[in-house]
Length: 609
Ligand code: AHR
Image 1 (cartoon, protein in one colour):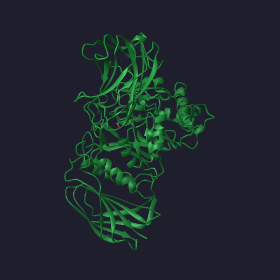
Image 2 (cartoon, rainbow, N blue to C red):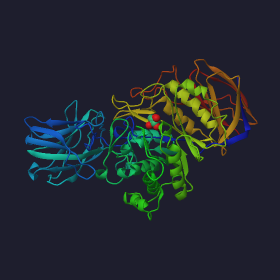
Image 3 (cartoon, helix red, strand yellow):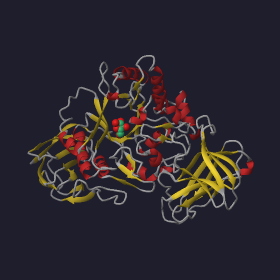
Image 4 (cartoon, rainbow, N blue to C red):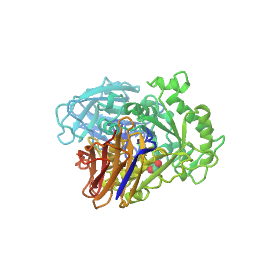
């Protein structure tokens, strides 16, 4: 079989934004995931009551606890955890315990910043003592915190805890206790470890580093289904996610747990800033998943207005109302925005209202922001969308079979954003077989990246603890202490790292099934990035012709990702079983033979010029 790459024919430019991230609150992606908060159910607004909190009367202490639905620290947070202590002393204190998101991770010699809101029925309750205890040893593993004495008014209290030299562990619990009888109400109990780039209210370091290594060019947020909500009143309402945490009412997510909204609109934007990604803002489009929609026309106007204001919050100068609000929230500099998506997967809307809804948003947004590209989530009549969002959740075989799908597609229609895609094989994170399907699909996207302007895998993150996962097959897995990238993750890191800016024309003759390729070139350096995928159980030998290349260095950098079986994978316990391996291929030239072992992905860096 022969693969011929015509090095004299640049088919088109590679989209500079081809690979990015898609994200939403699913699988405990933010709460219990990327968002650094260590305390779970911190505001008691969860409809399930006192989840994740336990009573801890020490020794002879006597106490009870319940959710108080009438007491809260703000108009947004209307509930609290009430601890009633009938008997307590310094030795026999009474407290409430939180185990975090399947454990509170503590690493040696680190500083943890905490806070809580509280009030007491009498000042005689005294201060609150804060301890982090190891579940196994029962020992305190950080310094202890003590608040100033409580008052009968809601107030915020802050504390710091510093860990000792005990090895990193996640079997730890946070205890807030008092040493005198009385009643105490708690809300917004928070504990943060050091965060990525030291952001206050920021993100987990290991996960941020893994995302940064993907070198993503954009972030599609906040969903996905999470944007829409099951019901209109459960959509992502951006105005309720900005400003002080105590003023964020939180909301139920469609993925069956409650979102703290600690990851609010500004936090998404700061995440973009930290990873040098451009925001791709999905605005609520007037449809929620339980077949609820807002009719186009006057009923939809307030939602369109809300989207315009959201765009102003992201991009407006401080002389605009919402730009000034962003400055007040801590970020005077506007963010750069090129793409806005209206809704999510609106082909589910059986009422057929998307045509009208999209047109209404399109016209209003273009009138105020003519440079913005407006993405439609499905085909629409009447108006030609700038971009259409295609979603693919498939098996590897299905992706192999789709190889030519975009090669033959008409170029006069809208551009394409593959806003969600994944080979769904393996769980909780995809296996080697999935990485092969992904790689095959990425070769087809790269060959057609004049048409496919952006692509983002989904879902991105999963807390692998039982109960953490709602969607099997997610790119990066973690528990509270550690994380790992799936083989699919490494395939993406690899493809984006060696991308180039020119698409070279190619033809594969006599190529076996499950062989896939793309060839791009970096115009500055003349390096051809040749990506080859063998999804079959047999080795495949290819003759590679780089026609017109002239001199090609005989030694090429070679990076491979391979597995012995399709089922091989990475886990928390074996996080790097399948990772890219860099070597040298010494027989490159204008024409050479190359053998791909079974189940393998290759990037050859061929130096021309
Ligand atoms: O990625 C998981 C879900 O799949 C998204 O929320 C939704 O858009 C799609 O159906």
